[in-house]
Image 1 (cartoon, helix red, strand yellow):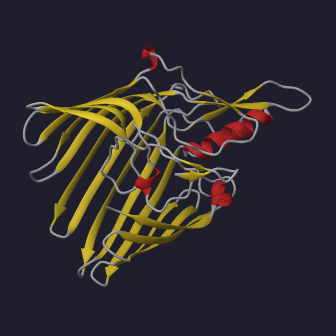
Image 2 (spheres, rainbow, N blue to C red):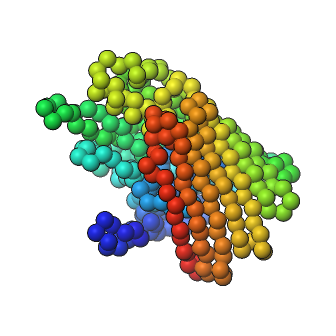
Image 3 (tube, rainbow, N blue to C red):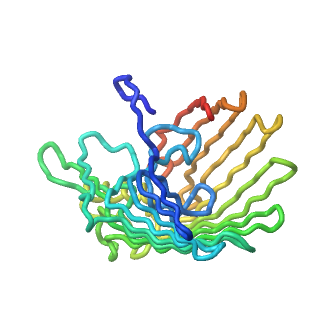
Length: 337
């Protein structure tokens, strides 16, 4: 549930589906959350189901909400699974948009269906997967519409994308190695449309290790390489330039190549009843960053409380600096059964 502006409580069903089990397959139909990727927190291949970025929530998975879809898991062997995902009901991630802007979604037709295919291997020396997704970007891009004495308006749209992806995970003793990459083909193959993202390659790789009994440290390096890059600051029209820069900030496409580092440090005490964690993402190229500290205490087997904060830092025209107004703290009391 969430609270609206008028104070009323609003509820939302996150998942609700039926499953049919066969000898070597499982078929699931209904509202469901399907997440892809093995990297920690940053997943280039995770394009199937949306997140809610409007409400502050303590854990990444809490942001997810399901969409009505069909998912078929076929078990090719004890270690290999082939997954088919499809839906004609595209649902974007929830983000804050400027007041007065126009938002257009793709028509909910069979020709606009989304489709995903994934071969996943679990077991043995390493886990890995290869995947393909054809659908729509979960985040909108802005285009300029109209022109009058009152100024120009903005139309937010969701372009079709195709994604080739892969990931892996392998442990060596107490060390864990993970990696993930995706090539994203967009509607702007030439890279000349200021109101659309360019095609790009996005990859991440890292290592984690547990020290002592519960101290876990995870460090990852990531990179985004933009194909047919054009600097949005070089556009002649001032309105189009402003919109193109904002699109590039949100999409991480201000630079032809951008590098970053993420880390997560967590520990547990008092028989695992008290947990503390701090995670951060640093864009090395633009020197902006995001930090999230969390403190969780289990009062009993059913009740758990969490305190945390989201801190964005950097220049105004950077991915995280652009979100400074969203800084804040939060508290959550959760009952589990």
